[in-house]
Image (cartoon, rainbow, N blue to C red; front, side, top):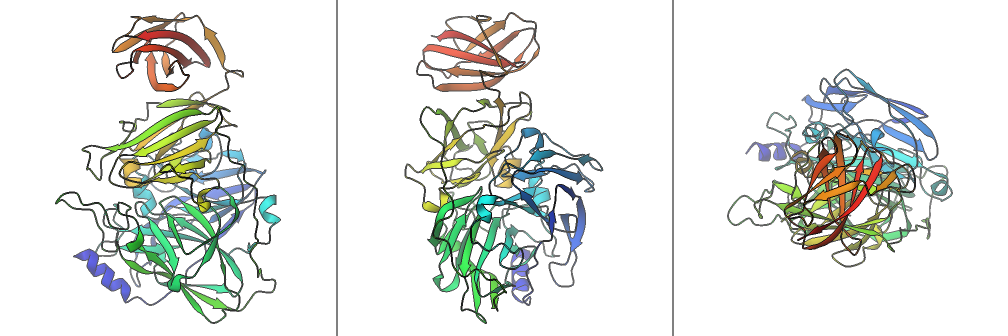
Amino acid sequence: MFFLAVLAWTNAVAQTTIPIPPTLEGMTFNLTPQQGTSEIFSGIQTNTIGYNGAMLGPTLILNKGETVTLNVHNQLGDTTTVHWHGLHLAPSNDGSPHNPILAGADWSPSFEVLDHASTYWYHPHLHGKTLNQVVKGAAGFIIVRDDEEAALNLPRTYGVDDVPLVFQWKTFSADKQIVEMDEVDNEVLVNGVLRGSTLTMPAQVVRLRLLNGSSHRFFDFGFANNLNFKQIGGDGGLLDAPVAMSKLMLAPGERAEILLDLTGKEGQTLILKQFGSQLPQGYPGGMMMNMGGGSNMMGPLDDTDFDLMTISVIAQTANPVTSIPAVLVANTPLSQIGATPRSLAMTAQPMMSMTNFFLNGLKFDMENINFSVEQGKTEIWTLTNQTMMAHPFHLHGNSFWVVSVGGNPPPANMRGRKDVVVVPPMNGSVKIVVRYDDFSDPDMPYMYHCHILSHEDDGMMGQFIVTAPATGTVESVPGRLMFYPNPAGRNVFFEINEDITKGAVCQVTDVLGQVVSEQSAPVLNGKGRIETEALPAGSYAVRILLEGKTYTGIFVKQ
């Protein structure tokens, strides 16, 4: 009942002004994760986490082509990481669970900004504690600018006609403290203040940078009176042209840039709403699947429509943007010709579980590399969802292109660069095409995972390494790999004529050249084992990646 009590109390709160995050610009940035308190509810101090402040963090303004250094000074009192969500960088700079920052310690990644102009964000990514730290308020925006975007007549006066807005579902207890869970979220914050607050914008074309920074639930954004807007960008860059829309669904981790034409609307107010009743079944925030008599994990605001914020329109600025470009940028998606196929299946145990999820039948293991990707090689990943809940799939260190959703071409607003894509429930499928061109690392992996943070923390995550090109720094060593027994049964053992003890990545391909198995294997004194029980009878080629070399050979499965 305390959730309903908080809800009733919130409805009585007077409107407040939505704050605009401060900015940091330049080549060197200093961020301090820290504990704090915030007055989210009038007269009450709520324990929160922020960067350089009590909650949320400053917006980092980066310019494509510049080399930046990000100094993180951890004053949180606990281990953390800072993941630069969506940025294209080496895994050693990514801020994954493999880049922990101990309490009181510093971390200073430095890298060239390679990304296209768009809206990105940063947040903790410590395995098992991502949800705990993010829901307490640890998150901030990153805005990348580039010459191509700068040449367009778009709003870009920060905080005036170009405003970042992070929307976050949260669970509050009866004493107005944030509960580190996500199943029964009972409130929504906009830039850290309660829903229903007001943003002032001029009577001209304005840009809103929308981020679903929630741990669990989806938003279906729309304006009262079905007001149309134009989406101009997604996760990783601008679209080819503005897309007219009246509703926009964003999953946790997703971003979108939209334009509103407020010309001639001075003195008017607009209401941005959550249309939860219009979310498809199985999408958190809407109606969840019925689990046959058990709890369906519905929160007090799920499957309802309510106001998120009010836009109060004031006079134009001195140099207003009053028209929306018909054309934006020319995107060139990756070619699928000759791409290597890869499959990832989302499953639950038991099948109807709404909490216990797996990727390719596995839970995350910090010591287990799930597969490898060769630098410069294009891959098509088929993502399938056999569970009763939609899952937002996030890929680290790179953008991808959506090829299809449910076998159909993606809608126009999903045809730009993405790093989060929603895989629908009940045998839904998505195909993406991706290529890692710029970075390889034999030891440090990139992550892939569901961006529902409780799922991620509970192990719905995997990791892979990008190996150097076979024609580059990796030495191919055919003829030094022996298999036994051959033909193989449930397992095949291999031996390398070198006394090496280290973890290896084993890639198995069939006679058509398709990768049918990729697994990590410990190598002791040059000997190791590959599991082959699931393989059909036939002949297989093997590539074993070990110590910067690629060992190749062939075995037969009986």
